[in-house]
Amino acid sequence: NAGVTQTPKFRVLKTGQSMTLLCAQDMNHEYMYWYRQDPGMGLRLIHYSVGEGTTAKGEVPDGYNVSRLKKQNFLLGLESAAPSQTSVYFCASKTYRVAGVWNTQYFGPGTRLTVL
Amino acid sequence: KQEVTQIPAALSVPEGENLVLNCSFTDSAIYNLQWFRQDPGKGLTSLLLIQSSQREQTSGRLNASLDKSSGRSTLYIAASQPGDSATYLCAVIIQDQGGKLIFGQGTELSVKP
Image (cartoon, rainbow over all chains, first blue to last red; front, side, top):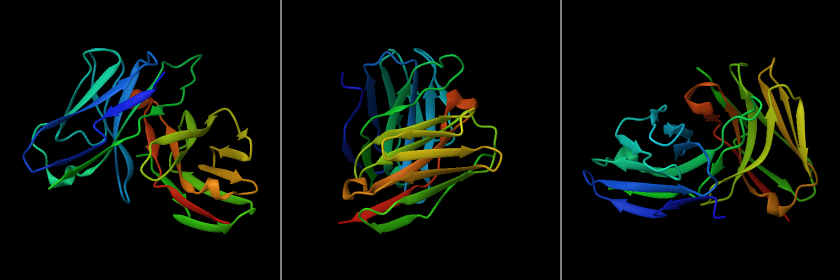
């Protein structure tokens, strides 16, 4: 049981390049999230998914796209990278509410992205 | 708009000291409040989750309290150890956007031997 894994761990891009970050979870969780963490800003939600085939925008979605074709995977894409997207990206997952109670989110180890 | 603030931003204490980390939030309409630990270059590890109907949760040397009416939570660490050195993040869980977490900026704790 690997939990939540992220690929790659590090990446350097040039402005205008594109890339896809992969998040995978083996806990059969319905909900998946992408956050970015920036100094002085904390973690902010980019996009999220409440189930296979669904995606929705979070607080800071501009410049990113996502897809959830399989329940266990959540992909984050940058079509044309900008220096403002230099950040650490975290993926998280959790299961449905049980008896009305939100459960904890489980986080991956992060991807450190630098855009030059 | 919900905002979460953590004070202090950084804290350095000698080993063995009891300490309190503070978290405040602006909107009491939260589901839960959660404390995480983040080690440098690592992901987040959940420490304690307090449901909105609860007042506190305990795990080992950690105790977290929640006062929704005043918009405050505290994380109490007893008998601190160098291994407790990390950044501690407070987050509230709200209804919308899939039960997303809204994070504070964290308190960076250093426990000196």
